[in-house]
Length: 165
Image 1: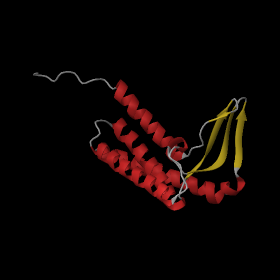
Image 2: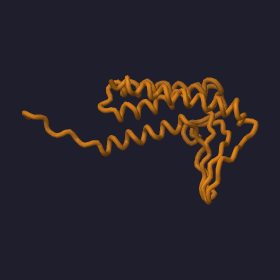
Image 3: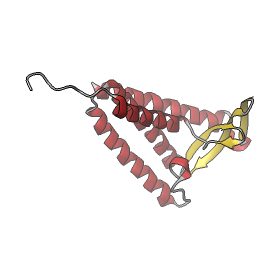
Image 4: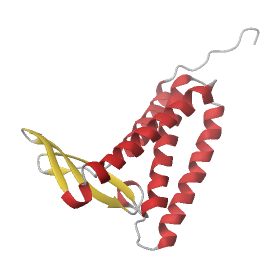
């Protein structure tokens, strides 16, 4: 049951991620434009800003060589395979959905690494002059999935003793 729930979530995240990235690259032509302000509300703002992320989260392990993006893509594929195995054994719906979000996001970013040698990032949120790291739909799905997994681990009611024990 958990794969029947988690895999469709992964597919939705993957399709949404790749379609939005396609639109950023080909529809809006964000690499040529560079930045599109979306809104400013007092100290808060949101822009579309083109960034090619050659590393992992927050630009860690970034590098220019071919082997760098191939190694990072292989690492992400291995992690996705581990997460799918975990998803198959998920104890509840929240875990299956959260793992689906993480897997879909990871695969979306792997596709970018294989196609472009870097991940397409474009969401630029900022407040009081401070900019968060530029991210994409896949990154957001990964972060939300991990938060849900941590919350589930911390706050799920513990099973009581079984009857007859």
